[in-house]
Image (cartoon, rainbow, N blue to C red; front, side, top):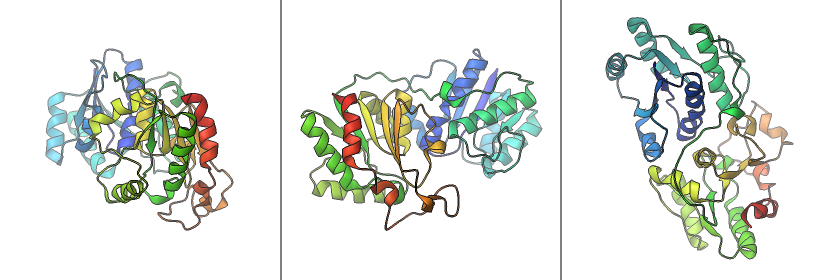
Length: 325
C-alpha cells in the first residue's frame, strides 16, 4: 500500500503532521508513506531518521506537475491533513480521474464528515480526527479514535545532551512574544545558580528577528543563525527549551527535549497538543480581552500585553532549575 500525505502549511504544522504519519504506520506497518511539504521546509528533515517506510517530498509547484507525480507514483490513498483550496482542486481531480480515495480535514468548516468538526481541538487531534474519519468512510475502518497523547511527533536524531538551554525569543507576531527583557533577566537568574550553563538563541534572517538580534547585541547576549537542517540536532543537545510558541518548540518536543512554552493571545489547548507534565506551559487564563471577538486574540500589537508580561522571569527560573541542576 502506498499513501500520499500532504500538509501544505508552516514549519510547526509540518512537525505536528508527523503524528498522523506515526498513526498510519501503526495501522499499516507495511505501507509506504510519502509526506509532501512546502519545498522550503524539507531541509528540516534532511538529517532525521524516519525509517524505511516514510519518505519526505516537496509539494511540486504547478497543477500538472502534481498530477503527473501522483499518477506516476500510483498511490492507493490521498490524505490532506489541513485542506487548502489550491491543493484540494488538484487532489479532487486526481481522485476522480485516477480513482484514488481522497480524505481530508478542512479545519475551518463548521460542519462536515469529520468527527468533532467545527470544535476547537488540539492541532494534532484535529489531524488524527480527519485521518480516522476518512479511513472509516473510505476504508471501512472500525478502530477506536486515536488520542493525540499517544502519537506525539517523533524526529530521531543522534546528539549528546549538554548543559544548555535553547531560548525561543521570536514569534510570528509581537503579541506572542514574552518580553525580551524577561529573557535577559532569566539568563541572569539561571547563571547565578549554574555558572557554566550555556544559552543558545536561534535567530532567522527575517526583519523581525533581526530587530530582536540588535537589542540582544546591545546587551551582549549572543545569537546564532542556523540552517533548518541544523535545528533538530541542536534541539536534541539541549536539556530544556524555553520560549514562545513557535516551530522551534515543536521541533524540541519531536526530538525528545523538555519544553517550557509561553502563551499569551492564544489558548494552549490548540497549539500545545502535548503532555503538559513533560512540556510545561506558562499561561494566564484570566484575561477577558483574549476572547472579546473570537476564541483567541488576533492582535499583532498590544500596548498593555498583560497576558505575557504577567509571567515573571523568577517564576520560570524557579521551575526550570530542578530540570537543569
